[in-house]
Length: 426
Figure 1 (cartoon, rainbow, N blue to C red):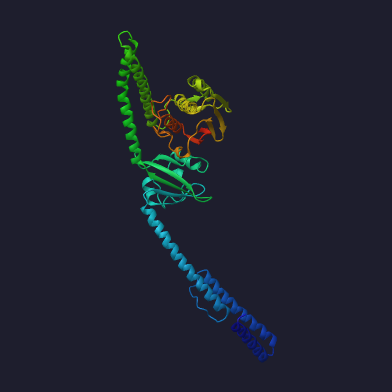
Figure 2 (figure 1 turned 60 degrees about the vertical axis):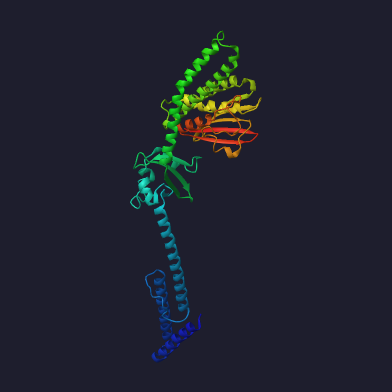
């Protein structure tokens, strides 16, 4: 107890004794004086409560003593709180200005995918209007199955982005990214990639047109070569080696053109045109038989493990192309007497196709690029090498997987082998 509080209490007691002596009831006087002291304490506490709750702006102490110090401490707390609030307000203002200027759409979602906040770009790209759409579920505004599945599977899938069309403009292509930043909230961003999409489309159309234009002259060229090779009686023997080599290169070039045309076809649409229930067990057996015949001199051990009898809905031609490319690649880059295993199994919520080998492996720095067109891990390889690949097989695999809404996962280690797995949603 402060000295001033002690003297105040003593004063109340003395006054109570004096009044009690005058009235002839000292005990009653002391009791009344103590009640008056308690009533004064109550009013002081009530003033403090109003001040803390913001009901009163008067922070000047009414009496010296403990309440004076409490008032002073509260005023200091209020000052610090005011400074901190001003700092936070300045930070929020800077954040608001930055997000207004940011060209990408930013939407904050809660645990039920309801909109908590959105920047102005979200209105232009995603048709998400803030604050009109507050507490609205994002999938009720953007009704794309791909986005709905992407949002629901965030954190449970290797897929990092998804390409969608803007709800406002059919010719506006967006790349959406979902980033969880707490246990209950996540950020959805969308970037305009229309120019990138157009550039890819121009490149794809160019390759398709050039490949198409090369098809006819290559066919004529091969026809004349075959005619000359077959007419050995009128063709000088010294020409035969040259004609044979020219024929081999023509065949290889024709195969390359066919592959490019196939790849361009795969890039034209997002889904296969001819879907059916494909028996992967039979498809794998056909591919293993073909691989054993083509690479029989390598004496590989090819094994098949089928743990699921479920069929996959899709294009059998495209799936055969993808699986055969993976299997032929494994055989091509696996040394003699090596092992190659192909598995088809269920791993909820996916059906998984896995091609694994103990071949030469792939360095980590190449893994992110090996599905690009014409990308070669070994730049020293040329098409004139025996059995060399044209660098398009994995590009075809990537597009087939995309058209079947699958995920391609590649793991590899130099000198120990590679594992290519495709996960299809059931």
